[in-house]
Image 1 (spheres, one colour):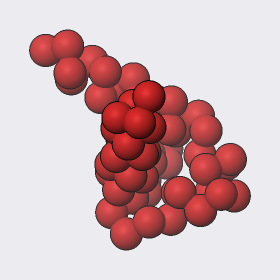
Image 2 (cartoon, one colour):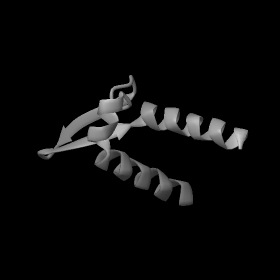
Image 3 (cartoon, helix red, strand yellow):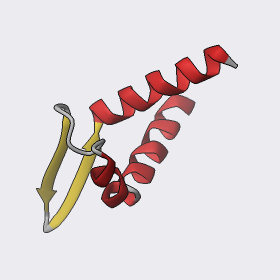
Length: 63
């Protein structure tokens, strides 16, 4: 249950940082989805979150 809460918090964080992430190229990877529902735009950064998790894992392994 805890991982589900963390997953949704990360999705909210990515949604808030979307403008900055697109500038550095992370919001446009294949596997990042944007869709409209009831007049709102939702952003689901699956590929970007996997990439950042892998990067964090490598950094954590080195230190």
